[in-house]
Length: 138
Image 1 (tube, rainbow, N blue to C red):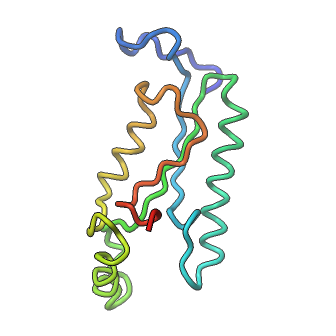
Image 2 (cartoon, rainbow, N blue to C red; image 1 turned 90 degrees about the horizontal axis):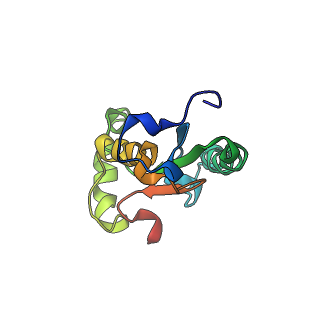
Image 3 (cartoon, rainbow, N blue to C red; image 1 turned 180 degrees about the vertical axis):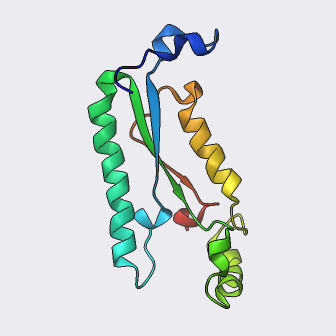
């Protein structure tokens, strides 16, 4: 990314001061900031992704490369069905712990990542965007 040209030719809408060479979006987890019991390794790993994001954002700013992270909450994926009864247990908890009272979809997580990759996010650097329906604010 350091050697590729600025993205000015991609769209006539991009002002020169908002040009960039690229955007990196790391995927962490809401567990980086709000932990659940019996998950210290997972929480530590996700907090590490957030810290890596901030460190890389600092180092790559000089090269017009932005680095941010998305921190998903509970996402409705097939992984939810790997353990028998897990989905039912999670669905009972959701109304009590997620203010929006539902799981997110993989598409909603992808939308956040796509926004962070776009030139519309040209001044967002080193951020961790929580996409969790409000779970981490409760």
